[in-house]
Amino acid sequence: MLKKRAPDTAYKPSGVSGVGRARARYSIRLWSVRNARFFEWFYAQFADTLLKLHWFWKAVGYGRAERPVKAVEKVAKRFLFDCRMCGQCALSSTGMSCPMNCPKGLRNGPCGGVRANGHCEVEPDMPCVWVQAWQGSRQMRKGDAILAVQKP
Image 1 (tube, rainbow, N blue to C red):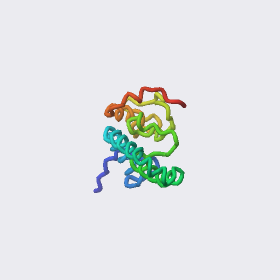
Image 2 (image 1 turned 120 degrees about the horizontal axis):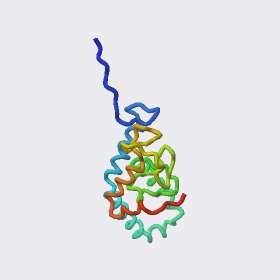
Image 3 (image 1 turned 60 degrees about the horizontal axis):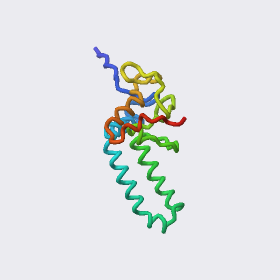
Image 4 (image 1 turned 90 degrees about the vertical axis):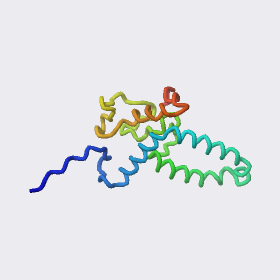
């Protein structure tokens, strides 16, 4: 006699198998939020390094250097934060949780439809992106940036 398998209660993005790339990307996104303070520190160091290389960028030409730098940024941000490269990055003020991952696409704040368990009202099995943003921001030195009103 075959036993029924218990249902898997872990979040799975809609239309994706449990072993798909989207699930792995989602796990990395959660890891990035849990390590928001490290990424805040890393970004500060990286930005300082880029500024110290002003002489190099000027010699090469900022226009020529932008394309490869942007390509690296796109790959890294897509991998770590599931970033959509919308051009209005708020990672530093949203606890390293990209608000564009919200199923409603709300970039400037939570919708108010968060369930009692902290999950999304649109995708009930998915933790709310803005709850994650709050948790990530609490780990960051400049975490109060999440309290600033975001332009629509």
